[in-house]
Length: 208
Length: 84
Image 1 (cartoon, each protein chain N blue to C red):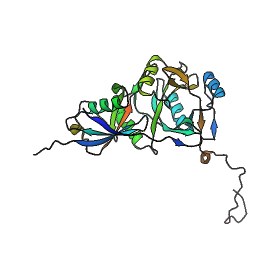
Image 2 (cartoon, rainbow over the protein chains, first blue to last red; image 1 turned 60 degrees about the vertical axis):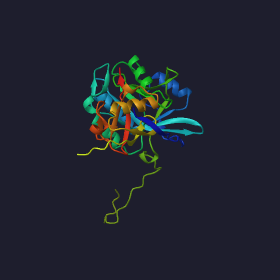
Image 3 (tube, chains in turn yellow, green; image 1 turned 135 degrees about the vertical axis):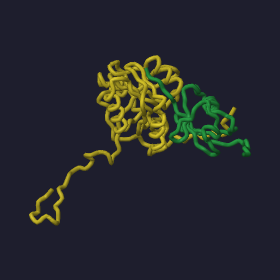
Image 4 (cartoon, rainbow over the protein chains, first blue to last red; image 1 turned 180 degrees about the horizontal axis):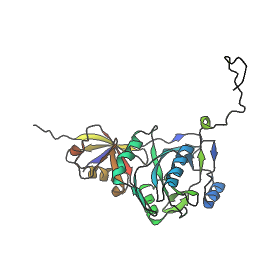
């Protein structure tokens, strides 16, 4: 039997959380309560959020994917950033979902071409029309694969337009307060003013 | 053809934590054994994971020779979740 003979654990980097952030417009009531009581523990990039939402909206059945990101800390408080997601073909119904056996290579293609050194910080899946919670199957998945403090289960209901995030603490399902974030350079309105530029080749001096 | 059976080393990465470990393998070891060993080391349920090398899924019953695993290869343990 093979055995692991050496182990390297990644260092948790000290880094300020993203400051450009907003509460998700579909956040459930419970999620809003959690966010009003606690600082965000998870930051979901707007592009990843859009991929998850579009994926959920595009299918009548459940959808699922992996959350790719990293674990950081700020002044001793750990938090998670989700930068991207990866998914593939699914075997799904309205009440169940898993990756198709034939879909792995496409999933691995996404992982292989990831633009950053990812950690799979959790998973997302949809509950179309059933609201956001963790079912027995979801809890079993969370316990078997995503039992670390930084792991998260993001659930989205595209019918009721609801989203929420959960994690397990000592086997108990807890909400994970989260926000959607973007980088400063991605803010289309970051400039204070917009100046019209006069073209030197424009004989009439018309500004564009 | 002369085939020399020799052990080789691979690096297995736990994608859920970013941790990675060196693993010493014999040619007759199977992919399933690698998953079991890695999952056991990281205290995971082996049945909940698959193993990839690059874009390829490594099949459980294949030996590492059949799977084409070579010395110094990087493998990654990937969770296989089920939602309901």
